[in-house]
Length: 451
Ligand SMILES: NC(=O)c1ccc[n+]([C@@H]2O[C@H](COP(=O)([O-])OP(=O)(O)OC[C@H]3O[C@@H](n4cnc5c(N)ncnc54)[C@H](O)[C@@H]3O)[C@@H](O)[C@H]2O)c1
Image 1: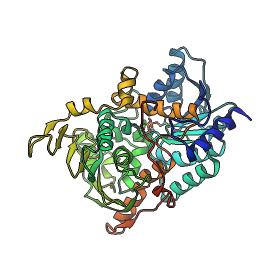
Image 2 (image 1 turned 180 degrees about the horizontal axis):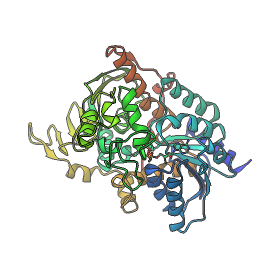
Image 3 (image 1 turned 90 degrees about the vertical axis):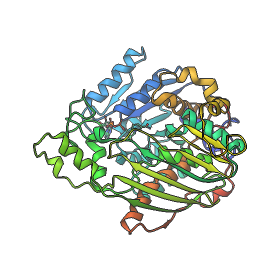
Image 4 (image 1 turned 90 degrees about the horizontal axis):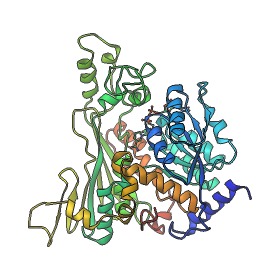
């Protein structure tokens, strides 16, 4: 059996019957990984890979020579053997050659959204395990295609949703599992992040944030591709940071599922005002663009077990960053924006308590075990955990803790919310990607301190 087939056979078996803590075969000591897309995000994830002794980064691919060089320099500075480089010729399909590289166990995909589904599908077909940045695809059909490919090939796929590993989010998961909130009733979250300076810049690679009002080919990094989605799409464009934790709390695809969805979009003002203000009196072409994305998009989901979940996408207006978590049950609630909690019978009546003491008490075993290693990793440490989980599951040939069903269910919120808005805020039935398996599937995410 070839090394790659051996890894995959174990993972496919594990996916159907085993929990991560009971891997099918003895864990492998090392994995050989490649990365497609070595831009701003890719480099953050690469740093995590390069820090590990159990990962060999053997291949890097990017069509932007500056980004590719930065990544290769990172490997050299870390004292690692030079990965094979692909894409410096600008060939947008250079990743296909990377996927054929001998001995490749897995690939991290950190490219613009429109590439995630085709790259993941081709990787799975090549039997190369996938760790995919958020989102899983663009259209609803993309999501079905990614799912069908994973089921047909058995190749492991994990959505690299890092917020599921945030320390307070994981402590809240422990509280949910301990029954602290009673029976869950309602949850809120979202992506509330002023991205105006991310969506526009001058195109200078050394000033990717807020240095100008270009977007598209003349811009740099995310402004090159992400802003275009605000021009032609109107929906919850970035659901997984918010819905990921909420889905873990409510057991979506594992005893529960989304049944209905609708979405409302406000008017679009923020990006236009920003370009006018930033272009300093000149009439830059960006000031004439009509942005379709509503400044605040509000999405509601209903769950089979009776919970409701509200998501807000809010990226075009001035505001401090907040994912706006609220987890509410029959005995109390947690809200992250005021870092407060109220538990009936434990908190003073009708009063908030600071969350910190609860977080310390319910700190997740993963954080207790790996806090030191996570120190300095991206996004307050959670990027350490998401890479750790992917690598450990791959080594153990065990199910991915954020698996294909999670990926497509969370990510499909985008096309469904777009459809709802386009059809006059219509409430839609949410597709059951598990085809009924949600009833018997068991939670696997972060049950202990392994990953
Ligand atoms: N989980 C998180 O916290 C988080 C944070 C930031 C970004 N992201 C996600 O990461 C992904 C990448 O975002 P980013 O900020 O790094 O953007 P970026 O524009 O800085 O990087 C994307 C890179 O992909 C390269 N690329 C484009 N097409 C390619 C192709 N066909 N083949 C090879 N390379 C190609 C680009 O040249 C660029 O260097 C996005 O999906 C984004 O949503 C996630």
